[in-house]
Length: 277
Length: 252
Image 1 (cartoon, one colour):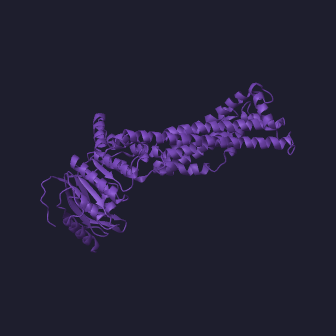
Image 2 (tube, chains in turn purple, yellow):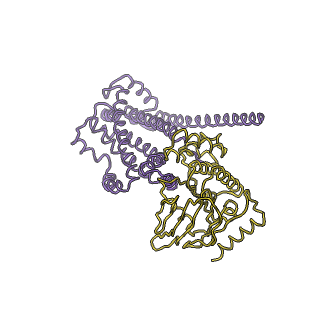
Image 3 (cartoon, chains in turn cyan, red):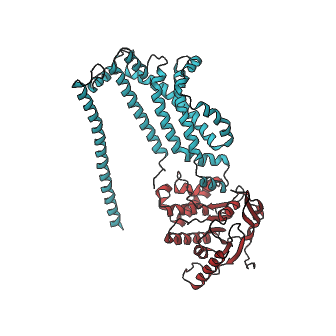
């Protein structure tokens, strides 16, 4: 028995080592991909195939990035201030979309009355592109944080509602019946079965919402801002500094990836029961 | 149809149970009784309304006419302790094995100490102690089904309904789980209604078999299986029962 166990443990260790090696290999491959892309970019610009005034090299961009960490020119704020300003706008809109959108979707998906009552309004509002709200939002709220956050809210709200709605609609009927035969009330079934079973879809919705809100940022900051990554990009365009524009883009991309990674972490913790058999 | 001599008290009375879906008559005036602690199998041809019958018992569907009484009172999942093992796997994937087993007990708001006691007992009986903290998705399908069966028995139900619980399993696993159900049934004294289209399975587990006709289903015959457990499927008497029921179902 103990010999068997030892053998098993040895086998497991071997397997884990193999897996580690494999994942290291994959990580190296990914890094090589990015590096290769940057090298080609650098080479193309240096060889004069593209005018350097239009497309700066990766090295220049890195220099500008380092420069922006401690210098305010040309847009008037250091990089960190811009990042924080953008995060504040994006997260305000994003989080309020989650707090309002997901419960709304869940209620609509579970209670027929709520569905019939709310869905027509929702379906009318849904196809309106978030940017079309900008003029109205300016009239309502001016150009402050609230106004920008509201634009972001509109882009994040729709996927939250739709995914929560679809997720809870897809709840396995058998699981509902199991709870019914145990004598659970409808509300009990809603929060004990409906909500947990909708979570994978809800997370997918949050992911889309996060992407939307981060990518609408530039548009929202066009509303007139005094700081922010979108604002920095605008200024970069105005003063014809493509390196500033690209630094803004890169930082937006990187922060987006970090936020998405954090979300994955949450998802893995909350959905650790989800196993593909 | 002779009443069998059985002095256990009546647990379930089904009186004139009829179910229509629109024009479609599915169940036609079913009448029978189930005694406390009895193990009854319902067999019938595929599509004859076996599942509809069970769904009426649990009030997932309301009967069109007639009714079902438990201890003389119309059945009500809120009042009675009914447990259902469905055809499809029905464990809650986001709960661990022990939480799954405790699920119904928590809905019934039993005291925590009692929940712990029963969960532990079922984990012991089903040999699931080692995987109590594991999620159902990490188990094999047959182990998951054991969790579901354990969950139903943990309720110590007035009535345990099983709807072809082993439909999707191979022969070996099926016999194993059938033995398991019989063991739990004897250990806990639950009243069981077991639905299947597998005649061998019915003869293997049941004390009494109710044979349904083709749709619209009515009761063709009630048959007492007078064999001791554990049963031997090669026993001539066993085969006789099996052939008899097969003929009854074939003959329409």
